[in-house]
Image 1 (tube, rainbow, N blue to C red):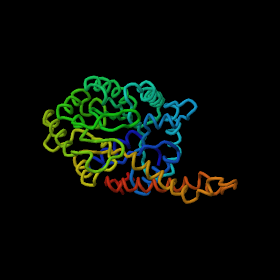
Image 2: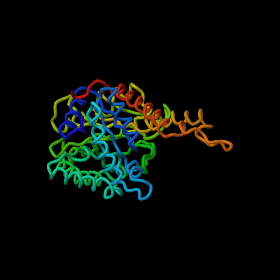
Image 3: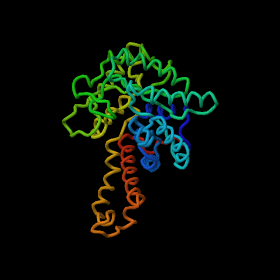
Image 4: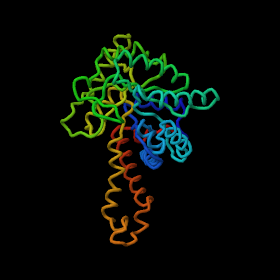
Length: 343
């Protein structure tokens, strides 16, 4: 199947919300990690989301000039071709983009999709993220209003992060403290500024103690039950029926989360969960194993010639792809998206 159309992407999110499952959103930095993600989704019979961060896009753009837009567009165009060979629907998304990178990343990408839509085509990406968590909430939502209007015109869904996620990702960092918990007032102010769908669809990255990167159990106190409070408070404010879930939530900083925490988040409206740290490790681990086991083949030790078959990137690259694909399959199982692909 091709990359998801705007209509299919909306259906994917609606199905996740109704079925209380979520799609893994897998960060990719190369054609090979893209294939690993696609393979994992296909083996899980799950639709999914592939995303490119600003750092990932810069890497994809090559180290000669490090152009984020070039890198993102190149991989997106590549994905539009190769995804047709996988029997699942894939949405393309751009991950964390702070204020100082909007003009060099999200806004140019929006412009590309605007032109495509004007020409009768689908957007290049299906969603973009605006990370205004380092700004005041007022400034954050002001920029989000501008971006949401443009995204809606381009048939794109916007993701917004309204309060900090701890840790560090691509240069955006926050301390681990009490500010990592979104309040009901924060949620209501978001609804007041962005609406509840009538101004354009958006995904909400609310904070419930989330931390990017690697952490051990006990170092972070996740409160996924907080998402229920945010939904209930906003629903009450807008006269929605009891038990309704006005927001489509995103789970950031999910690496290392317990199954219980994940399930609670799913019950409370999470439809997308970002996974990067765990898949990075899954990709790298077999490469390290291969190098250690075959050091005399990948290196020309003591004047020898080594072994081309062991240092050939395809040899260890296949191992890396298989390992990362297996981790994506595991993520689909954890998030209950296995077997839910749109036929």
